[in-house]
Amino acid sequence: MELLDESIVPEDAREIKADARAFAEEYIEPNAEEYFRSGDYPFDILEAGQVAGLVAQDLGPEVGGRGLNIRQMLAIAEEFYRADAGIALTLQLASFGGEIVESYGSEVQKEEYLRPVAECEAITGLAVSEPQTGSDLAGMTTSAEKDGDEWVINGEKYWIGNAVEADWLTVYAKTGDSDDRYSNYSMFIVPTDTDGYDAEHIPEKMGFRASKQGHIVFDDCRVPEENLVGTEGTGFYMLAEFFNHGRVIVGGHALGLAAAAIEETWEFVHDRSAFGRSVNDFQAVQHDLSDMLIEFERARALNWRAAEKVQNGENPGYWAALAKTTSTEAAVECAETGMQLHGGRSVLTDRKIARIYRDVRIPVIYEGANGIQRNLIYRQRP
Ligand SMILES: Cc1cc2nc3c(=O)[nH]c(=O)nc-3n(C[C@H](O)[C@H](O)[C@H](O)COP(=O)(O)OP(=O)(O)OC[C@H]3O[C@@H](n4cnc5c(N)ncnc54)[C@H](O)[C@@H]3O)c2cc1C
Image (cartoon, rainbow, N blue to C red; front, top):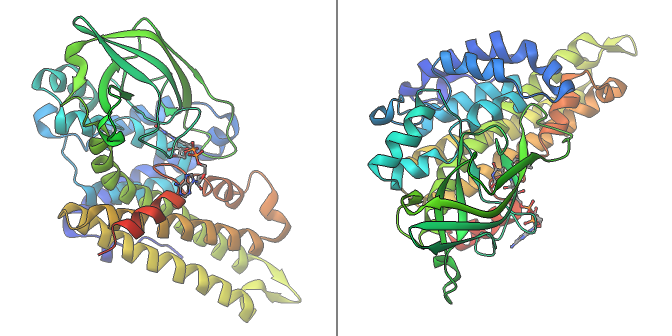
């Protein structure tokens, strides 16, 4: 069985989908287990992805990128995550947060910081979450205070993709103390070699092991005033818009994982015998496989619909949250059933299903835990 057929994918995303699959089969899949085991950063695969024009190409032609749209990024996500989530996240994180600078940054910022990312000479990341909270975006405490012609950043960030490896990050920091808690935040470009910036890797994770997150400490970290992105006090709203786009893509992360769980399980039950029959011959097993397909196909239909809604600006927060929640939970369900159908072999650590089972626990949390998505769905309902 082979999932992720292209019939649901709009015309303009089919070619890149085929390129992403070919790349994933050549570079990601054969190396996935080794990187999962070592937990190393897959620099060589990142470089191959850059050469193939499949990394950081959401950035537009005006800064040297391909300007891939949400449908094309979703198509890549499905294919990369089907092969391996940890490596896929590393490839997709190379430009993470760059879209904020692209939408709101100055021409000078775009030229100096975005162009090297789009031209694959630099990588970046987005620093929002903190040790005390990741969910409450208006409750973060890392601050930026104006001192002459500089901003002075103090505080901590946690879980930040590429915190150690990136050349610069887009950093979300508190710049005000008004009663309107949503107007107190701003975005800054912070080169990671700035004095007062210190990052180290967080402890080893159980899943997504080929992607690296870090703990950052800002200790009187000074950046020039021109590193403020857009207008002071609008960071929360920039982030909300960015996440509408990002959550549709996270849905794609989960769809790739769900597809992998189903394909892997399908093969296993067809190769395995019990009671003198192929395990696949038992109707109960067929029902389990059918349930996996039901979860997967309905999530995928919703996710692709949400991509169009977000692209067209039609109640995007609602649709992005629906897609993220449905697809990530479908992946958890598919992995759970897949484990059961693998019997004892499910818990062997070199089995792909065991890797998927650990990986699916992560997209239900990042880019806003699903509890937060349910708050958004209720609040932004039509
Ligand atoms: C692998 C990985 C990569 C990540 N990459 C990045 C990154 O690059 N940049 C970045 O900034 N962050 C990143 N994150 C952080 C991620 O976005 C946060 O973990 C996530 O937003 C949840 O925050 P938290 O872990 O602090 O959980 P908390 O905010 O402490 O919440 C704990 C749980 O409480 C529940 N909860 C909390 N508040 C509410 C509420 N109001 N309503 C309902 N339920 C609620 C939710 O179930 C939630 O899961 C990453 C995380 C992981 C695991």
